[in-house]
Image (cartoon, rainbow, N blue to C red):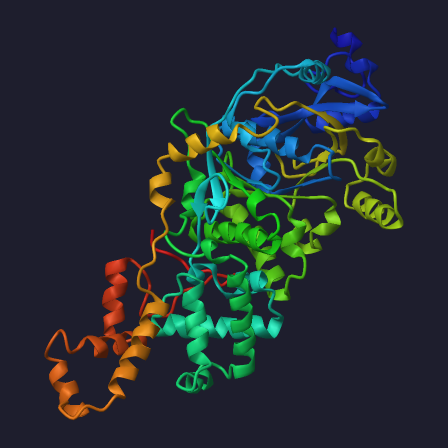
Length: 538
């Protein structure tokens, strides 16, 4: 095309046949003609045609401005996650994916070429090459195929645990006081039996006086929490809490060839525990937020975190919980972490959180019922002005097609673009379970996290205290007076054991020494984040 043939509106570089394109298409194309590194999503759809000359993309530096991938079941959301994750990994960016349905493990293996893949690649002008990507596979509490992911009760914190236990606001505040008490007394809450032991102690005759000293916690509310804990444990939830605790810095690893590691958390084994796995995902994010340094705006994200089935996180959430999510999402961007929420409609995400999501990939929506139609209208209102009739487009999109708007390199929203998405280059389906198990067992992380450890913590300390109290209450004719025995016992290691246990429980200097030796924060108040999660020494 010569200069004399150029259209009045300047066409973006790389768009052939630009004079034949309508003005709205030229404006859309110009909005996605980025100069820096970007992820390739697909080709523009306009007036029923796919226009491969107009490529729809996301600037790599904008991936830490968060995003939303939404759409009805079966519209291709999982494949969109896979497509984005592949390209992030190839650019050296680590990725976290929650595998709710058990079909994301295929990202570790090269894809299989077939007629559908070839057709899609030809339509969007994609040079499709089968490729697998470096992966680590995890499973909550070791339930499923993966390296066990556990958290201690102490680091999980009262706000997240209240969500798991489905406590109301008053009970959540009371649980916070119990954590405060345990922190002050140096009672480590490693697993469920530790927390149950502390609550049981606080509701006992001996412990009731302690309740008055921690903010007026009622015995009745403590009893409700204890019953919730007992029921929770009876449902088989114990394996998710304990040690060795997962170090979330593992999610930021880069493979030896420079590609970002894709961390896949397998969740099919806990699909019937949505409160648990959705809250555990938030713990991972909150822990990252707690530990990562501030980096400001970076050339590429340090990690991109995909939060699947996001609606489960917000269902029946307390105000404190929602406020903590909003604050975490708002601030974690400056630590180089991008968060993509994956759900069916934007209305599943609270407005304050939705306002933080700069990149949008909206798959098809259904409008079969009045509620569906209402959700469709609400979704349309969340998009910028567009030359499309979005209500019509969103109900007519096929599988693997989506309406896209992202943030440009300058941070401004790009034009709305109906897009036919590219095909993932990795396997679109699960890998063989035997191969998955081999990959897990060969991981250098497997030996670190595979076996659970049950060391001395609150349960053992309180049990020892109870045993010591019971022993001291038994009279003996040959025993010396309690006062003289106590004073002599302090001079002998064996006889002073019971005394040292009591000193540990009440928070003496013994705890500070133990804190230093174990690399923990026993013996002093634990610093907690907005979620109540506790910082750990790595």
